[in-house]
Image (cartoon, rainbow, N blue to C red):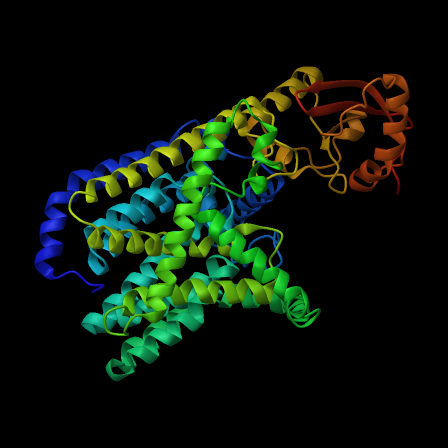
Length: 537
């Protein structure tokens, strides 16, 4: 049976408070440890800059309509508005990330409550421990992107849905409809909530009531109005391109499905970290020794087998005994289908919506094995769970050690940490003295990550015209000088390659000359002076 009796739930709650508290302390420690190592990528920089713009709108009693276009589908303004509200009281990169961390900590607690209510104590303990210590979950909870806010709302949606199917209360119906419409607004991968809620309503169709259904739908649809208004203002261009992408090249959907399935399995295990660091983990043997990779690979195989077994059991079991687990499996299946249709192969954000529910299925499979085993083997199975948790923590410690060393590859999700970026900006500030710092970079003359941090480290950002008074700007990239190359020759070649981007970004003529070049770890810094001082008119 999927459900525990009320007596079992009460006894488990009384005996597990200390354990839940320990799990929450572990989750908080892993998510709050060394916040100076949070990733400040260009995607994070764009989110932060939009939060600053939203804060200015709030000061003018206005509101942002939508978030920035950092993925194929633009998300709502939920994240940047939440960050802007925090920014009213404390404006720095860690403060702006605080709401994301809090939402993820609450999701750990809610996952325990969900599993305890619908699946029992051992699945609740196992799924919550795996989720609290998951390197994927921890790293995402330290990343300022819309997908990082999904878990809490998805868990709430599934919990209210399963409770409504059991208890048939009106407020549960209204909340599940409301959440089903709100979740896609947080991140586009939440669109799987719409068909999932439809399936839940069909399963409980005999208990539908009009008032909560209409109320939840009305409030949920109202949440879409700012985003739809933005699409109307921009001529529906993004939605048209999105629709064309779904219809074009049908053969690409098979590749997208395999990529989505691979991402799902990687999120359940300690694998697939090329997204975070840009290279295979064997590139850093000092941080990821062989024993750690072998042990985590073995754990990954075990978790994958448990997941597959749980899906098969949910599909083959009777509807009365496995309704809850079958609906959880349906959620994952709908997310796979959505990711296949959207062909979101560039980022794993689209599959993050499945992670807590995949771990629920893993925990259910482990519980079935525990029940089938003799009493002599049950402690051994608990020990295996503990070993998996220890492996997650060890792997996460290795990840943070790598980020602290600064050896990760440029362009990865964890390309450079807050501490590394601040070191670069401090070096430029020392070189610039009292002059206003004008930073340019390889992204059409722009470097969002550094412009974002300038608001905290350098006390503001130039308007793009202050360089006219000083004739100075700084170019930052990660293109190292080839070994054995002459630096003078390299600087002349670099001038020719970066002048078009700088001149277009700053509105100047292409007459920038490199005065000084230095490097901090992988970051190359160039101080350039404008020779003619005659901007284009």
